[in-house]
Length: 369
Image 1 (cartoon, helix red, strand yellow):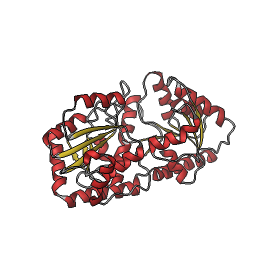
Image 2 (cartoon, rainbow, N blue to C red; image 1 turned 135 degrees about the vertical axis):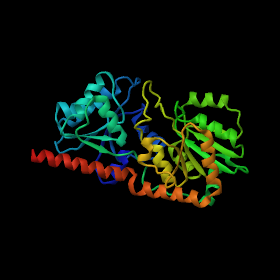
Image 3 (cartoon, rainbow, N blue to C red; image 1 turned 120 degrees about the vertical axis):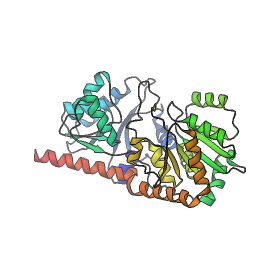
Image 4 (tube, helix red, strand yellow; image 1 turned 90 degrees about the vertical axis):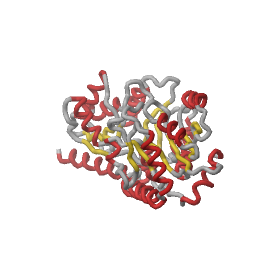
């Protein structure tokens, strides 16, 4: 996603990554299906392996082989810890290091060295993450830049009167005399609040709840356990379809709990997360009901661009949805304000401009040293 934002700003980008598809000729189609973006014009240096183990190391050394002869004016942006350490600490190249987590074991020492460097700018996805990193390492990162995640530019809301017909074409389950249709998009991991949605469905049988996303095993388990006729687990759909379905909902739900899994044992991101789907929700122009978590308040404001409710109180979620059902003007206000916030501040292109400013700052500092 960020690559597309940089490309829109006229940057010549080379991506170093491990691809999930064996045949490199199918990579562009797979990227479009997963992320809804066309990267066919972007240079990609990739490799494929049957195993995900040591993938980050393989990517780092492949990037090293490619970049060692490049001009030192080349800006390097890395979310790969090993590549960042090689370029920023070992080779002392100006570097923008983006991190979304607290590293453990010996990776923690690599992260600490990066955070302590004067010629490395560390990009974090929330202000809370800076606090968490400082507590984790025992010192504040030397140079940081807070850049929340974002959504693709150019997403336009649908008029409310067109939403239901569009949704029925994507999800026939929406056909019928439903008072509202509420949508959830994302993984089904622990802490994502699916239990809240199930409780809402029990409380409001005249409201339809559609849940998009999840891996095959999680979706299968939910389908087997679900006996509700107004709750449907739709499973995975290509990203362009998911984005169109978002724009077609009456309400979008983001019921994160106080502990949130990303599908990796021991990783809990609730304290510092910046969910990409939050910005895609905002881009849709559909009113959003979200858990009231401190980190989400960096972007969401109660009664202005979202309704914020207790993560563990299903009755509060039902009350929020009921309010949006009867107060159409307020619902429209929430959606319109959220879309304006997205358009002005939270696109990948806007984020790319901030990254380019950071890269220029590093180059200027290097020329003066």
